[in-house]
Image 1 (cartoon, one colour):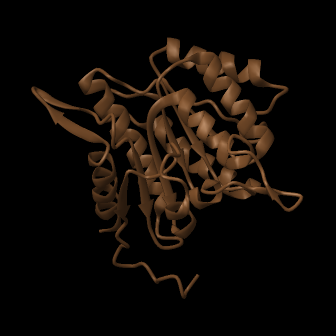
Image 2 (cartoon, rainbow, N blue to C red):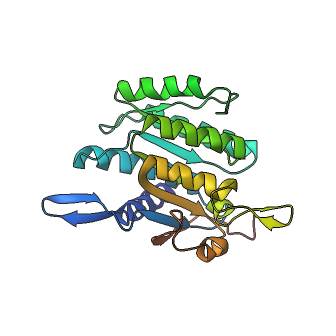
Length: 238
């Protein structure tokens, strides 16, 4: 079934981030970034929510858990809203040890003017042994605020990025490339560095990703090809 296929894909992604040590598994310090590549509208959101659950549960088992999860959605407001709605399912997760709390708000995205508000929400969730989840859109001001928030908390976290090709290369401004640390690419990179945990990107258009500098923290150390379910109609339909 499609649900089983999404779960299999999620397990394959997480497996790429781990390594065997004496007595079990741990997070791999070298291969710590994965790019999952799939066709349009094939259920990538379900897959990365399953990735969030598995990484959180595994982290608790091996004693190196994620204290927060940041999900960077696409540029427009609509993908962020839909991802946030889907992420609400994580708050109902009761099958394992991990407990989640959605820190994001539908009509109040994280920004420079409300950082303290979200700092309190995230800190309260962590203090209550819940993993706060922030769903933010790929907007310069929002990402700057997310970076500030992540740096202020200084906790290990997981970064998941949808439409990851949008942050693959440096942006142009007035016909010139912006500095490496500027723009969407630089901000997502800074968020990843602040979280200090695994990074998983999802995309249906991987060309730009494979052309980015391999020294970038967003450059994938592993690739996973997602498998469409039996009822998937293909890119031509969409």
